[in-house]
Image (cartoon, rainbow, N blue to C red; front, side, top):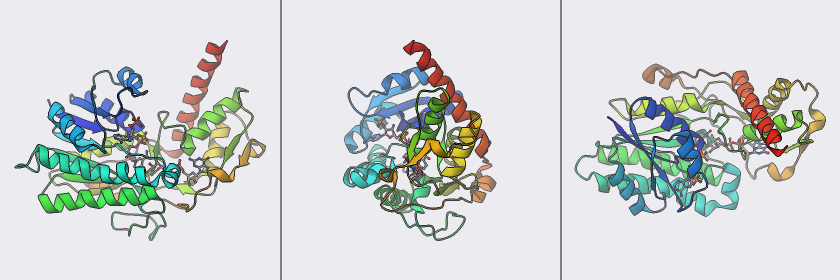
Amino acid sequence: MPRALISGITGQDGLYLAELLLAKGYVVYGLMRGQNNPKRELVEQTVPGVHLVTGDLTDISSILRALEASQPDEFYNLGAISFVAYSWENARITSDVTGLGVLNALEALRLFSPTDPKRVRFYQASSSEMFGKVQTVPQTEETLLWPRSPYGVAKVYGHYMTINYRESYGMHASSGILFNHESPRRGPEFVTRKITQAVARISLGMQDGIMLGNLEARRDWGFAGDYVEAMWRMLQMDEADDYVISTNETHSIREFLELAFSEVGIDDWSHLVSFDPSFTRPAEVDLLIGDSTKAQSRLGWAPTVDFPTLVSLMVKHDVEEQERLLVRAG
Ligand code: NDP
Ligand code: GDR
């Protein structure tokens, strides 16, 4: 049976990827930080087949121990401080985890398999945030990177370090440049889930309105379940490479709001949304739209969930979840 190690197992993508790999018959290990991680129970309930090992991307010996324990054929490096807004306030720790953490993972792999650089196939979770102030529309694998946040800069470092280790040591190291992908498992700090949770609560009379920042930013939003399939496909290729993963459509936060409110039958929502400048960013990424032609032709990958379906499934999930909370509260 193939074996995989996933860092970031407690996150949105870690859970979807673990489900996918377990369904394919993999033995799956998850690297989880902290001695008492509050998300341990969630992982154990959602993907009970996963073996958890403790470790931290800032601690190279803990990554090495996880490699020894899991003996993986594939290592998916999804762990990161991933909230862009947080990265300005905590630029150093973001750089340590999201940037230098990738170097630690690559170096741990070299120590784990010094004579066979291709023994473990490596996936790096690169990001469309690296395009930042976009230099071409749409963005492809060839687009010049121009990050706009400490998070984006850290991802650029991890991205080029992955390419460098592939070129320097012949490692099977691939980088997925994933555009925004969402799901009912998305953290509530990200704008999509913040909106769908709020819309659900507003529709049930549990909340009066929602405070947001810039509504005009545009993102290329896909479904996380589709995107982990692309990660796996990259590691099944004979040659490692870099791929943009995107839907090739762009929508504004305003459009997301429009669809989310209409899902609960609210057509006039302008009085329910207020502007809060604290949710704006020192430097904004105004427009992201990918071109995933390379992934579609070489990996045979394509998104299966379109934008209206994505918004609808997230709102429906949150309405059901909030109804359960209401019932429990009596
Ligand atoms: P999440 O924020 O949901 O998950 C991040 C994961 O990283 C969590 O499991 C977290 O663990 C873990 N982590 C944080 N710090 C450390 C550390 N020091 N050592 C080890 N693990 C750590 O992110 P997503 O699942 O959405 O994204 C997965 C990856 O893909 C991330 O690298 C993200 O930057 C990247 N990405 C995401 C995109 C998206 O739209 N979702 C798009 C492009 C890239 P804990 O629970 O302990 O905090
Ligand atoms: P992003 O996602 O920064 O694209 O990074 P996020 O959902 O946080 O922001 C998207 C856009 O929405 C605007 N916005 C708000 N954002 C948040 N979080 N909260 C608000 O109240 C709000 N109001 C407006 C933002 O300004 C921004 O333009 C995500 C993360 O998953 C990264 O880890 C990943 O690399 C990229 O997607 C691709």
